[in-house]
Image (tube, rainbow, N blue to C red):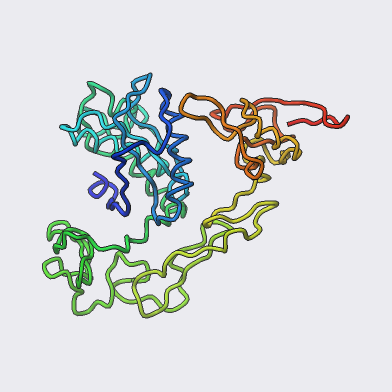
Length: 358
């Protein structure tokens, strides 16, 4: 579905199978469980070069939800989805959930009523997709495809333009993956649209010096030295440029972790963790991070100050050195957050006769 409609191929670059015990706390609320999955991924799988993460579970949730995700988070450490494997004998249903979930992570919304498909007028991004009793959906709507192209052109999907570094163990010309001594692999003959690649031999054609899928290739010729093949996606990232002798864009690099960024933030794995900017994004341009004593409240493990929840839904206390990793505290700005999906509160207290507002 992704390859046919969106020209995107899915590759598994890392896999964990938990046979002895779970590494996360499950909750009957699917969103709380997703939060725990995100925490595990960012803490334990951050070193794996990946575009997003998916977790499969057989756990049933209280509202019969079968999937959820951090929407629009692709290419970030938080790009995570949670999929319930409903039935091991109906892999196609799980595949539909994967497609729907990944599309949300890439920034696609549910289809509006005027977006339809050839199949019963419902498409993969229909809001009822994957629900028990709903028909199997196998097409993306024109609306979803247009949204995908728009996000791609905006530069927010740069991580999708690279390719997995590890070759497949099932080496076969025509599988769409460059294996062994292959110079290119554009798929089977009826699927190949690369004028630079011979689909029968998986070698470059006589006139070609590179394959069209390579970021440093233009009309089968190598781009000159200095051409930007991967723009910097943030203030903590660096742009990669073509070398002039290789069709592939150099490996993605970023500023050293801990580099100062933004107003008062630090770089981590190419992203800027800046509480000042986060407050402005949530509360408007006049907002700022709150007093340090507000963050100390994160060590109490209460609704207004915590480091997430445990298996039983109880709020976790932040360690002293991690209080800035918990609840975000801001001051100023609008009365309500710009994104209404976030819970907010107004906290005031005295500290050594000083009035503190969070």
